[in-house]
Length: 249
Length: 317
Image (cartoon, rainbow over the protein chains, first blue to last red):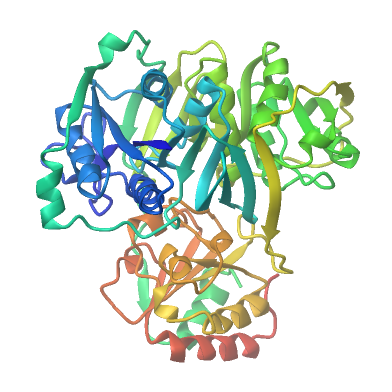
């Protein structure tokens, strides 16, 4: 089997976001960037499947500006075999991302496409499902367990009520939850080796897909701030405050 | 044009967030139709026809809709899509799984997880785990929108009498098979809609210690939540997780116990009306959003909390 894994470069999950004063977005200059956390789970799962002898090749793909390549390089360092970087200059919407990915899938013919269930920047949670629709492939979203069978996957999904298990025929799209696995760190020798692995560069404009925005971002603002609370000295005081001041119990 | 809402239900009852989504959907346009895809879900269709905000219920009954297979649902929804300007659902795991599949087939850029309807085409939605709010305008002809249920009040459930029309099923997918659902049954209120939520974090140290939390939850008729750290560590099941990648809750009272307050957790609870933090680390970021902070060892504080509650003559339910 061949697995294509899509990774996105986002503001690091530990960074406290700052909204630009002109309301045009959030500050990204000189801010630490890293791979979208559940995309690390997607890479890890693909590598585990390959290590178990059930996949032959892992291709990591990212779509973004020049520096987005760092995320592919990181995927190569933990076990992907080669990379693809589709260059776009602006931020594009999940629909456009899924159209680009569809083109790449048609070229690469993977059996599986893995990615994180949502990006922690725009919090859209759309791309995997959209790609599945465009390819008319089955989708297994929010996966917390994947079992590879003959020409099918048994996937346990995290849903609001608990867990759901479905079986999808291959080819399929899987979007990964944070609990799917524990992503490994790249060792120094593997980071060095990854530098020699190939990354193919493709310009999005050469793929012949419409990636123009459909959604206008009118403004970005800070959410209303909570007003500062107080510290209470004892449990007794806490319960009295909840009963008599906040009146919630 | 009209709005089509996709109902979430278990074939017997309407899932509660559908009512919140109805409120938002009818703010977009008051000609609101609801699509019920299910198997022997007549009671669901009937309940929804009684919601005053609903103008019409379309009921498709077939065994292929017994479980939520996004592929099967999508095919049925696409059949009806041409009559509508908007297709909406809740932004919970049901709608998140389903809506993008519909949007892509309609060549529409979806607007996810809205918290406010500004106009028919303009919405407010949180980004970056709720650390910024974006006002976005959809320029697509047909709009696919998911709604953050806790940002809208549930619609009235009775008084209406919308017509129920039957419609034929679409083709079933042969490539996806439902195997099983492991639902955690509980007598407690649902986490998403509970008036009071008490959550435990890594500070609980193990799953057994969650009994300290459940004793208080019983007393307050509260739902039990957890941080991602507590779920990852196996103290409690995933359906309890509150946060950016878990559930968003907006209770009247949220009690965070042994939770440091990473931004990803705050994303799921900081809109709560009153927040209480109990943590022995006085510098923990959870205190920055807490109305009442108690710097204490939770293993001493929780039993005291329970005994103080026991002293009260009355407790709101």
